Amino acid sequence: MKVQSIRGTHDILPGSVELWQEIERTARDLFGLYGYAEIRTPVLEETELFARSIGIETDIVRKEMYTIEDSKGKSITLRPEGTAPVVRSYIENGVSSEVPVAKLYYIGPMFRHERPQKGRYRQFHQIGAEVLGSDNPAIEAEVIEMLFRLLQALGLQDFTLLINSVGCPVCRPAYVDRLREELRTRAGELCEECRRRTETNPLRVLDCKVPTCQPAIDQLPAIADWLCPECREHFSLFQKYLKSQEIPATTAPRLVRGLDYYVRTTFEIVSGRLGPTQNALVGGGRYDGLSELIGGPPAKGFGFAMGMERLVLLLSGRADLGAPYKPPAPEIFLVHLDQPAFEHNLGLASELRKAGIFAYVDFEGKSIKSQMRQANRLNARFTCVVGESELQTGQMTLKRMADGSQTTLKRIEIAEYLRKEK
Ligand code: AMP
Picture 1 (cartoon, rainbow, N blue to C red):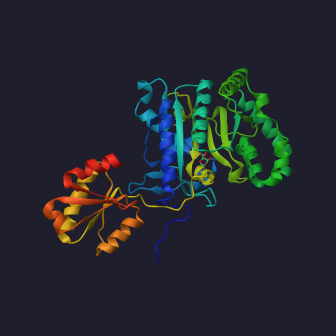
Picture 2 (cartoon, rainbow, N blue to C red):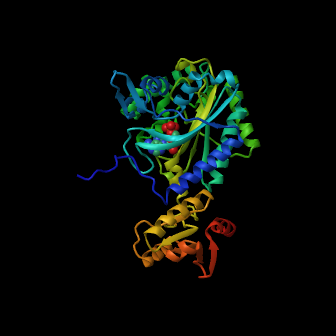
Picture 3 (spheres, rainbow, N blue to C red):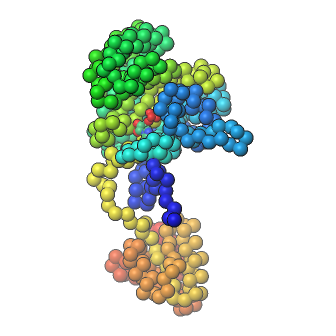
């Protein structure tokens, strides 16, 4: 039986990986300008971390987590998202006592047992950033500005920022009660899942994608009309800061998070090109109650997670991409005529690499002809044929492949010559 990759996972091969590297490099450079430091947390965490933070009632915890019992009977889970691990680490390592506002970013794989389809995988990757220790709406606008700059730097144009406020423990309960009442009167127009959520978590009905539920959902009261004066002020300041950075935003009354620790600002970046149901590229928001929920001190938090596969999908139309993969071209291809020359070339290649030069030695090619063919195929800039006489005289001839011109040098002069030629 042929062993294959697991359903919902995918390889990132040479030819594609360069774009991933570019995304990561651009993100790291840009996030650095905004004061973010990278954090790397383990891929495995105690199941309890996600059960408490994401919530027992969510699809992720109910059916999508890769959970195993270790040999001592402890339940551990492959992380389905990055925020809870970052907050856990922030608490565990006492970061709050070192810096008043911690700015952290992560890049890495996440795992969810979802039904695989275009843009949806079981192992996927996220770039995320979290600000801990501030509830200033200006910092929220700064995070979004940073995201916009990242997407623009990568050449993405057609995306939309959706924003909303989900209120706070002061104003939300009255809205949720009102929503539940309204949903009960419309039960006949709703799917079974929505009817269940009417009782367990009415906010999540607003997320429902079932087409037949949409007319009823469109008639539901909007949370914006129920915000307390503090939440209203916070949201209008957030919008003001976005505007002053010239960031266009669309208010989306149905954009909510169904968990109590999410407060105030919530946002998504969507693109029509991702398809009707899987259209979110970025999800984010404020989660001031999360730290306490997992046993930490009170800590204000705001952050986002961006799906890298979806970003790659959107960028794959970029004009400079799509060329077939070519292995990197060597600066110099060292051709050997016999075994002593081969051994000499191994040493010379090693020396050249120490000097920062990409030198190539062929391990398979038997004849000089086949080595030259390989040098051509790799698009080497120079070749150098080494045989008995080169070893005796210590003089080597470098051939520039583009025009066939030749230069004879002492072995120790080669590195310097090639460096100048670069
Ligand atoms: P979430 O943590 O669910 O808010 O997701 C944040 C972002 O991660 C989404 O907007 C997607 O871009 C990406 N994402 C979430 N789940 C998947 C998945 N199964 N496959 C690929 N990308 C995903």
